[in-house]
Length: 202
Image (cartoon, rainbow, N blue to C red):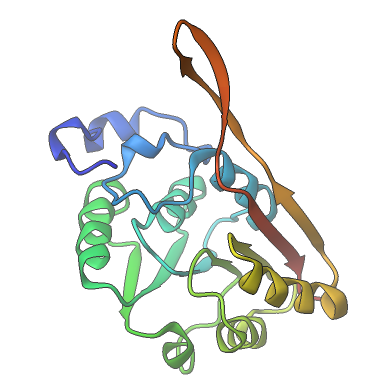
């Protein structure tokens, strides 16, 4: 968990760092529920930000994905969807420090907020995976747009499989282990597995 704001990198430090997605988790103020660094980097291999494009980030959380999108290419923008008040406040602080003026936050249930706003060039769904969200995002996505959705439960994984069958793309299980001390030895500690569906809308 990263809530000690004195430990977060400054705007000047971020400006000097690479724009390649995959900032350390510690660069963001978060409550522990964040798309982790290696998983973020994998998602961006499919999202492929281009100058001037718009991302929808569903389940905004800390805004890590939206911020990395805006850092990756000039004039990119993001709209984030989040319903939890405490996460919205953290997201706003992260955005103000790392991507000021480039991320708009839509507050409330994502499935109810998708209508009547600018169509995205890319969509990332990191939380709140439901039939309504998946169908609404796919319908709104521009032709040639990219969608990446993540799941950590069997229930939401089943929803991704249902979309993979008709739409194709890639369905991948991300299994990441980190070396950590175990007494005087090192041992591999697995992170929670993430199922990733990535697809281009043709």
